[in-house]
Structures are given as structure tokens and as C-alpha cells.
Length: 226
Image (cartoon, rainbow, N blue to C red):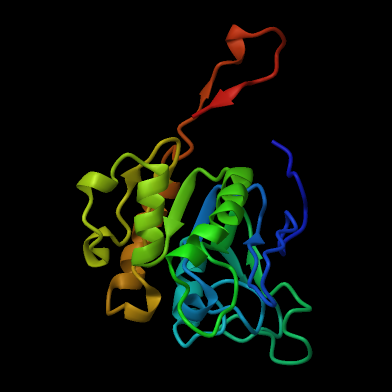
């Protein structure tokens, strides 16, 4: 499969109606899509990259690197994912490969977005998620986890949003696998290792779970479906 774009920052040119925002970032042909809440909770304002610039960012990014979801940070970038000198948005600080990072609500705001604000931003998030079409969704925190389970699985009615219990657990969605991640601001001893071990085990399996139906159509090209 070919990349639809080689742009790392905001690859689909999303332009919400707000003065500033933290757009999606990463590989547009990703297998893994890490879904956060909004910049006021999960950072990114300084570098323009989700999950950067917070006190917990080094631990979170290190866990993603150890799990093989990112390849590390660019030269001159601090452990929290923000460039030390110059314009921090002028470099791509996180090296991603088959991983995409984005938020339910990408706009920066002084207060907490209300339900109407999230509803208004849903069209941007959903369009990007379906364009990326990753195999594994990794919602971070309770709000993102609840939204992903309600919207992209049939499990919401029977799944309690207990992030301690759900952290690193594999849940089957409708065409996606879902691996919830406890909010990194709340991580305690063992949470990073639990996530790394879970993702390492997942990546060692056939997590794409695709079938080639090309034999049923003319030509020799594969036709992969989930």
C-alpha cells in the first residue's frame, strides 16, 4: 500500500475554526493510531505535536519507543519532545514509523471543552481516523477511551471505563483492535512496562488480521480486507 501523503504534520490539512490547534502528526499510512483528548490535557502546544511538552511526556514517549511505535526523538529535541532552540514547530521532533498521533479535540482553549465543542470537532477527528485507517487504535485517558469504544466498537455497553483495568488490554472493535492507555499523568510504577509488554506481544502477532480476497477477482493483485 502506498502512502497517500509523505507529510508528517497535519497530513490532510485539517483547519478547524479556532485560533490555534495541535493537528495530527505522524505516518499517514499508520498501523497504530494513538488518540488523545485535547491540548489542555495532553499537551503539544509548544511543539505542535500531540503528547509533547508535559512533565510526563518523557515517560510516555519512551514507552512508545520501547514498544516500537516510534523511533525516538530528533537531534536537539528534549526528552519531552520539544526542540531546545529556535522555533520548536520548525522541526519534526518525534520520529514515527507506522504510527499516528492525534486528538479528539485539536483546538487549544483556555477552559475545558464542553460536549458541544467535542461534537463540533468530531468531523475532523473521524475523517482523519478513517483516512489513516490504522489497524490498532490506542485511546489515551478515559474520555478518548469511552469515545473510541462507543464509536468504533460494539463493546461500550459491556465495558466499564476503568483505566487501571483497561490499560494495555486488547479489545476487539469493528475492524480495529483497541488498546486503551491509562492517562500518563496518572501512571504509577509498572504502568509503562505493562504497556510496553502488551504492545510488544501484540506486534509479535498478526495484528492486522487481513484476508486476501484477490483470488475472487480478476488479475493478480491482492485485495486485503479486515
